[in-house]
Amino acid sequence: MSLSEFELIQRYFAEASTDASVALGIGDDCAVLSVPTGQQLAVSIDSLVQGTHFLEGTPADLLASRLFGSALSDLAAMGATPAWLTLALTLPEPDEDWLQLFSSRLAQLCNEYHVSLVGGDTTKGPLTLSAQVHGFLPRDHRLTRAGAKVGDLICVSGCLGDSRGGLDGLLNGFENHTEAGYLLERFYAPTPRIELGKILLGKANSCIDISDGLLSDLSHILKASGGLGARLQLEAVPISSQLIATFGEESARQWALTGGEDFELCFTLPPNYLALLSQLPVPVAVIGKVTDRADIELFLRGEPCQIQGSGYDHFQRKDD
Amino acid sequence: MSLSEFELIQRYFAEASTDASVALGIGDDCAVLSVPTGQQLAVSIDSLVQGTHFLEGTPADLLASRLFGSALSDLAAMGATPAWLTLALTLPEPDEDWLQLFSSRLAQLCNEYHVSLVGGDTTKGPLTLSAQVHGFLPRDHRLTRAGAKVGDLICVSGCLGDSRGGLDGLLNGFENHTEAGYLLERFYAPTPRIELGKILLGKANSCIDISDGLLSDLSHILKASGGLGARLQLEAVPISSQLIATFGEESARQWALTGGEDFELCFTLPPNYLALLSQLPVPVAVIGKVTDRADIELFLRGEPCQIQGSGYDHFQRKDD
Image (cartoon, rainbow over all chains, first blue to last red; front, side):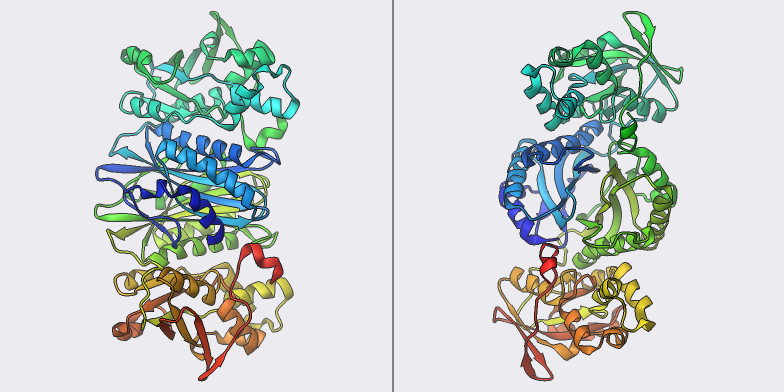
């Protein structure tokens, strides 16, 4: 660990480091941590790479919110309660202004979500940010991709496609600038659906966060659940008025299905939990049902339909 | 997570994934893990970056051993028992041959050290490898940098400077090729001193692994222990005959003090544990004593002396 850079980062984390589960935080060869009795640990590691996930010159505070939101979203998808964060930062140069902007935004988010930054490494090289998140789960309780059952309601939180709209605007310009701020915020500062995930724990049969695109991520659930299928009503897929106003209905609908990186939750719920949907901390739409045909069938106002492409893959992106 | 690449990696880890502490391994949004009752978790994250830590074209199996050895060394320095590994791999292209070579060497090492690969992320970009290691520690027992006491013996394991000799040979050629294989092995496949760290737990007052260079890492101990000092006998610093034969005594001695990345342990031991030193699984040399003067004093055969430079720092490397 290059301590000088991390000492700088640590300055912004004085408050967060008082968590009782952190026996030893940043500054030694390892952090030493305690998982509460009766809890298991959920962990996930993710990277953001300049040129792949964001453009050169992206302000450091936006990278912090993008990294934090996308990383914590994996905890939300398991129903876990966030606890600790570690960072591996590769930077072209040691830039104190960059570190200050990055750390200060990250510290805000850590405080908001009760997350302690417990360790890290800074190295020299092309700008790459990796984060590992750690959360707690009651022993033998977790949301996974693997439990969907025939007849489950297929649900999604929030609105889909906004993040892709924000990215498209960044790359190609916004056709209509009125809603650019909203769409960029959805791209740069995704909201990890932590509270929703915790409520779904023990109720939803399966869950995933939408990182690759709705159709692609839903297919991960269906495959992991033993080769099931789905019938989707496309008019029920939630799309923001801002996205439609900016890019038109056709692009909006396409991106809602395949855009990716919205970091909303897609989950399947036994029909007897239908009443739960009105009591959740975030709007949730029922968009279809799980079937026993190993295929995703799409319907628009009752008519079968098809769409192009199925999602987002880093290594295939240039062929999109 | 780009699953297709990680599914490939996972093929090599079938055996390791049966560990009872792993409730859910690779393939979902998070891994779900159990820390044994009465144990705490030690974690550390490290990155290797092409052009900073290794040269373009380095074979993937050597990168695996370099990453694994250096990452586990942080657990050794805490006295922790290795348990789990997560990986964030950024690769220019999805290269199955590269992944196969990398994964197969990594799986060998994971089996040897009883480590389970539990999660990862693969992304597209300049070659960067980040690893987080996780180990167990008996509750409230750990080796840290902060406990050195005046009068402690300063000890180091193995031989120092070999890794820097290997790197120098890679960059500038070997003056004498006879021992090139040994020195390259010490650079590419450092041995994490796990068993030594476990024995020292509860006995050594402080410990660190030598990543920046002996003088630099010892100064981390002295600073963390409240501003103590040290007297070192340079002739006691262990140097391999291979390093001397290849680069001469002057370079060998310099690199033993400042070279870095040997991943041997430097620790301070109360003098009453002197007898322990003959019973350890790796040769350990006593090279000096902790003093109350906030300075490192160097002696060569009884005479005070000085050396240039104090260690290794990524961001200052170009000025070396």
